[in-house]
Amino acid sequence: MDKEQLLYLYFSNTLTPEQEQMFSNLLKTDSEFKAQFDFENNIKQVIKAEQSEILKSKLQGFENNRSAVQHSNKSWFNWRIAASIVFFIAAGWFGYDAFFGVNYNDLYTTNYKNYPNTVYTITRGEDTSSLERDAFVAYETEDYTLAIQKFNEVQHQQPYFNFYKAQSYLGLDELEKAKDLFLHETTINESQFKAEANWYLALINLKQQNKTEATKYLETLIANYNYKKKEAKTLLDSLD
Image: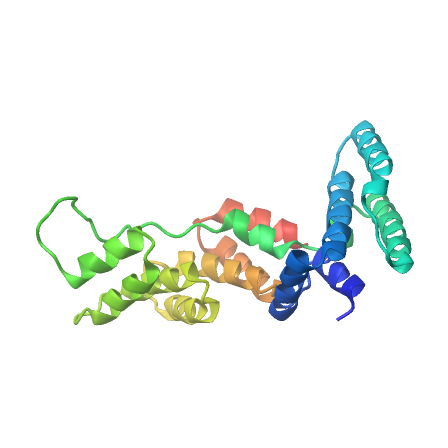
């Protein structure tokens, strides 16, 4: 893939997982690409500056240090300048987020936090052991692989196990497995975690850059539950 296109996709938050890997490898192995990325990332930070004087001073700094960023390919330099001009025009007319689009990864990272264990009390230092206790000890210590294993080994499955298994899969970044379990949770009338499941489904879809589905779950949460209602409204506004 063309390097310029790869940079464009990065700054517009539309890289596929395969392109993200390619991008990461280029940053590590291609010094010219890394220099180009650093320059554009600096431009991005300047655009976000709220005060015009800060903006001017940073631009002057970039101009003074421009000679430190050398490229053998003249088209790269021309593209860099053109892109920078577009960045500033877009920032002035539309605002940074409107031009670059929603940063789904940032929204996910800001709002994600694993759900605490609220169903099984672990007494520190107690001698008794059980698979359920072992599962929640593993969960609380973020050993999610072990937690899933122990949850599955319990003979008498508790209704809340699926929710915590979903949390464990989410902690392992196995989004589809987590999604399936959270979806199941929303279909069970007596589930004590229906609201929470909608919240985490919204977050998963944010990470997958599925705005339509994320919006659906946020709207469901706001309309029917009090859990994370304020945060859901803020997220929904960010997606507009």
